[in-house]
Image 1: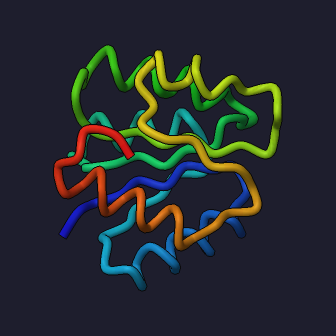
Image 2: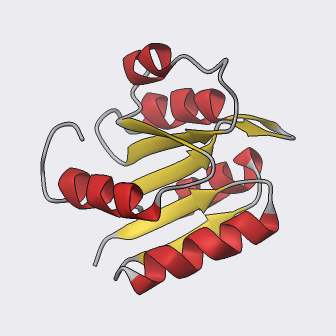
Amino acid sequence: MAKILVVDDEPLLVEVLCEELSRAGYEVISATSGNGARRILESESVDLVLTDSRMKDGDGLGLLDWIRERHPTRPYVLLSSAFADIDPAEAQRRGAQAMFGKPYDFELICETLAKLLSGSSHA
């Protein structure tokens, strides 16, 4: 069972994402900040990180850079954003495998997760 870290500074959204992903068969842990995510990633191995692009203590791209410095190939990182000013090409260049807009399309997210975690190089 793949382990997914969900990171978002909106606790209700984290709860909904965790419930949906658990229902889809994933082991899910969560953090409500980039710093919280870093602490988790320093002590636990995860297969995939789904992070918000903007949080009170930083942004998803900064977290993505931090993850890539320590783990160049895993975990996979997906970014989510309600903002149109996040450039998907820049996110991909920095190592994000996919980017989702809010509100979420859970079917698309689960389809992308399945592709990534089954060994496909890009969703």
